[in-house]
Length: 356
Image (cartoon, rainbow, N blue to C red):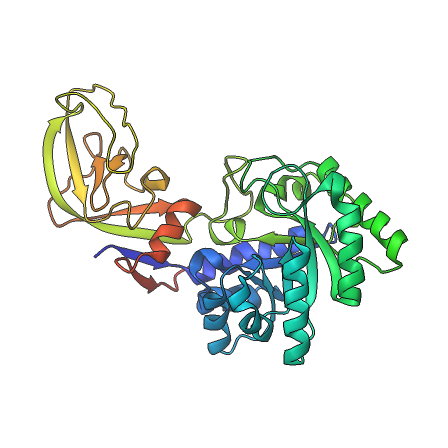
């Protein structure tokens, strides 16, 4: 079975660094744990690094955190389906919403449960994920404020995750302008401007975050030390927070190009092969059910991940200085997407390492 080594102390270092960096710009952090399925050890390290708020998208993960005694402020990053709303208001403190109907349902359930909840209403500033389109946002959020009253504590936006739109000061200014107009119309203050995620960190680094933006929701940067939208490692963070280990189950020299007509693979992809002659290839006991092959980075110098089926990871080891045998294990760093699969797969063993 492949093994995923988790280094909580390294995640804590990332969280501590990013909290300090963002704090210099007046930005508070929500530590997003969803890629780890709400792992309580990872969450505890984030909180130990000084974060006060956690973000999750699935109630099962929130419940997992609560069962281990974690009772810090919790933000639900995805509007819950109607059948989960009553459970959600028992577990969650702040909801990110983008429709008036679910907003009413959440508030009614909170009233029935005797719970107070906070609402952050989402605005689509161009990435085309969740949120009311920014040119129509003032009217809808004004109505949300009428319905929610003081429970409407913030507005937010998301960039990079769907459309890959790069965060700019101008995108954040849109949010601030909407908030100002809503405040004038309703007389209610907008306390939280939740504008940033990992893709927004370059603005913090360049000190170009507009004044008034006061919350970022960070998962990838803390947990992986990467920023896939901007195709970079985040300065000052570690990327060796998770290491996958998989066993070589076949080691043979084969041609680098398949024989015959090339169609699509089992996942509907049409693979492309470079003719490098015969190469030594290792097949490992991990596949697309466990990892995202293009986001799996070998730690052995000269190794190259070629492709994967659902069960097999094929790695070119022809140029490696190290010699391998069947039964040896290879190690890999994982991208955010690959880590998501590894954490979700029941066929990957999770082991905590306390080395720094």
